[in-house]
Every structure is written in structure tokens, then in C-alpha cells.
Length: 237
Length: 253
Picture 1: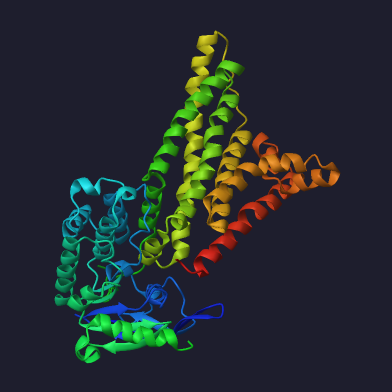
Picture 2: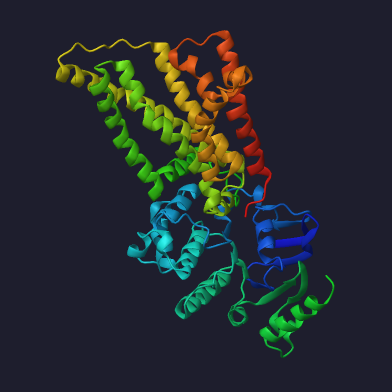
């Protein structure tokens, strides 16, 4: 349902993405891993149509994102939970999204319930939210239109232990219902528990991809991550 | 469901009326937006009352006074509606929900321009009773004469000023820079206009405040229209077009 086909992206002379290819199928949670600056967020922005690839193509449900009809009801995207107007309330953020998608106001309440924000919290301005609350709000915003595809950039960042357990259950439930989920994270232990496939990138290139069992061969995800990214760190680009 | 809808596919892009409703709501759903509206609501009656007390019950003068607050603040609202998406990076979500970015920009421009028209109507509505009250209080006859051409021209200038704000906002995508340029340019032009004949000629053709003068007083001649067109092109049309291209083609971060 998500497909990267030889995607390349250069800024000036710098290659942020280089020949990136992978797919995420229905009912799968794919963990998207890599060191800071490896190109995860760039790849996700390209996927969401916010950035044009220099070569190759990224598609969702078989089409480039920008050509999807009412993309919000097909793809849920959370690229940065902090990118919110601090003067808006949590409820207002969801209300604007629901209006855009033509959803009834009752959907806002459903989503608030789903992500565990109380009515009182929803009436507060986002400027006063903790990062964990912003993540819940951002995930809720992504889920408004009941999408079949989810693209989440570090959604577990800043969540407390209860929040992390909640997120794990939520994502598993969505995948069981047939959602395709692409999830980036630095919380390797968490990815190990929730993802069924891993795509690891470093310096814009895919270093490895497959199921945990295929890739790890007994190693923990953390060891695998350090082994793979250490190699790219020493090699001359 | 229309007969042409394909089963299993969702229909067409986000309807424009929905984008309009969302962007109009965004003008006033933040603290800064609400504060701006409240300040305006206080400024208009205050300006009308003060002008009435000073210059007597003349409707034309009171209408002009009522327009000063909106004329200064609505361009700022126009700037903020565009630049807010970049300063708070909400463009990430806005353009993910509607990737056709040109439609989003149009939906941002129209409510801001409509607010200028609405402010003009409100200014007149505030000035009429204020003229009557001032006449009664001062015990002098009210002057109701209004030049329709000047009134329309005045409203047109209010809309142009908001359009300038939108143009600068979308070109620079930076609220402080756009606000400084819009609010400081009249002062800069006042200086330029005094720099000999070359400066005066420049101001005559490129200073919106100078070129909108004839429109405001309701006697726009052929030459005046040409000068107005040139300054509108330079300060409104070109920035808007260049800014729209920048937003539609550029990266959203």
C-alpha cells in the first residue's frame, strides 16, 4: 500500500536519499530506522507529497500522494507533533481537520476518546501541552478520516510508559484491521515489540530490510542497528 | 452519491467551500486572531466618537475615521493568515490534507479580502448613528452628504491594503518582515518623496499611499489610474504571484 521505488533526493550537491526502495503491505507495521540525518523524515515528506523526489517515485495506494482523492481519508500522516499553532486548543485542531474531511463533530469526540485526551485537556491550548499530549493529538489527527495507511514520524517520542503501551496496542489493533503502517522511531526496544518488518537506512541508503528474524539472526535490534550504522559511518559515503 | 462516482473510490478533491470555511475559521480561532478582532471592535467606535467630538457630525469624516483601525490591522491579519502556517509549521498538516496548495492559498486570500469589505460596511454602520448622536449632543445639524465615488474608492483602498498584506505575507512567509514592510513603507515613501524631483516621481508611481489618493477622494483620472495600476502591480500582483509559485513549487518542512 506504500511503495518507494528507487527514490532519490538531492539538496544542492548533498544526496539526502539515494535509490530508496521498499514497500509496506496491508496489515503490516514497518519500523523505519536510522541515525539522525539518515533521511527518514525526508523520505516521509516525499511520501506525503510535501517534497519532490529528484528521481524515482513514492506512491500510496498506487498513486503519488498529491494525486489521491481526499488524501486525509485514505492516508493518516503525522510528521511532527510539535508543528502546531500554540494558540489553538486541542479540540480546535481536530475540529479543523474534521471540517476539512467533511466529518461530523462527533468524530472529534470519538478520536479524543481513542487517543486518551480528556475533554478538559482538549479545551486547553496546544502551547501548554507536553510532547506526549501533542503526540496523542497528532496521532488522533492522523486517524480522523479512518485511513487505511498510516505514516508516523517518531510518534512514541515523549510518551510516558503508559503512553508507549497504549500506542503499541493502538498500532497493533489498526494493523490487525488491515492498516499499512510506516513508523519511524529511535526507541528500538519499542520497534522490536511492535513492528513486523524493519527498513534501516543510513546516509540516505537502505542498509537492510526484512523481518526481525531474518535480519537479526539472534542479535537484538539494538546490536543490529549499531552494527549496520557503524559500517556506514566509517565508509566514505 | 452521484451516478458518476466510482465504487470503492472516494470522490474528487476537497470541496472549495470546505477549504473556505476552514481558513475563515483559522483567522479567528487562535488567541492572536481573537485579540485582533477584539481590538478592532474597540477601535472602530472609539475612532468614530473621537472624530465626531473633534470635527462635528460629518458622516464622510466619521466613515473615514472608522476605517483607520481596520485599515491598519486587517492587513496584519492577512499577513498572519498566510505566514502562520510557516511560523508554526502547520503547513505540514494543511498541505497533507489538501495537496493542491493553490486551492489552499485561494481559500486563505478570500476570507481576508472579505473581512476588509465587511469592515467597510461596519464602519459605515457605526458612523451613521455616531453622526446622529454627535449632532444631537453638539446641537448642530448633521452633514449627511457622502460622495458615493469616494466611499467606493475608500472601500477599494481598504481591500487593496489587505491584498498588499497577503502578497507580502505569501512572498516572504515571515510575519515580522511582512508587517514591517507594510507598516513602514508609508514612512519610507514620505522620505523618498522629498528627495528632489526624482524621488517625487518615484513616489508618484510606486507609493501605494500616494497612488490610492485619487481613488480615495473619488476623482481617479486616466493618469491616476495608470499610476495606481503600476503600484498595484509592483506591490500586490507580482508579490502574490511570485509567492504563490514559491508555495506551490517549494518544499514544505
